[in-house]
Image (cartoon, rainbow, N blue to C red; front, side):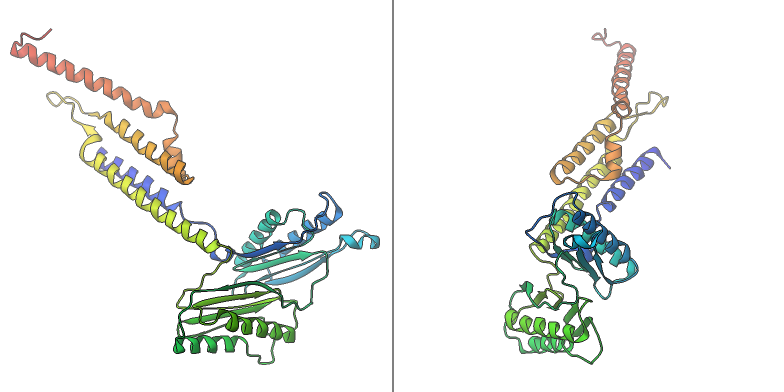
Length: 367
């Protein structure tokens, strides 16, 4: 392989890998839906803080092997009942153990940031729910509306509304068994519902009936709708139009996607310019005289510097570092600047060749 093609391949490799490492790492199951904290705070370093940490650690450890669990962490003595903390976690019914574990770990991490020193906190991600409190809530039915979100109206399309009502009716149907997680569909309408695992079958059915009734009434002819109560939720979407997040998170995700697209286009443009430079002009120059030598073109050095400057501009504007290019463009200065010596060699060789030619031709201007 020629030196030109080898250098070209290396540059293409660097650009390809840099694009690959921009893949977002956050799973859709870890998208924020809602969160809340109690106003009362405990003292840092208190026994209650230790119990909260113990409970949340137990939740993370347990989530790898089960999709639901609840915990009660008591104080060290009977007189310290005020230090008792209650908690639970639950994963969406279709998640496997690994995804459940990752989701709960993410939720616990966000709770630690959202609810600093709070006696109670709850956080719902797309794939899981985590809650703790100093008041006993386990096994207690709670139909308080926590989050309601309705999509844009699709008008009173009778076919669409019929399909939606059929899906919601299926989600709300009881067959006498305990079905805490339910999914259904009709045409392009999809629905999902789930109860928290500490409810009995009858309590679950009651909670879902409330959520579904509110969803139909309050969202009307919306393209999608979410109704999260304290112990259950129901949601539906038509034609994939469901916003799977709340509190502005969907807008943030859309912005992230737009940034990634912009970066991909920008990197592609840089790649195209770099390839044209390498292929057509700047990589090698024939400095031979009578076919005696070929030396690298010093313009390669300046081209690489320009490329790295563009890369650093991307880092400055978007705050994203591409690992391979970061390493390459931040090589010790002397490694890259050694190429600059070729400029002096080229100028010297060209001057010498010009002087020799003038002598041969008897040029009177030759010094």
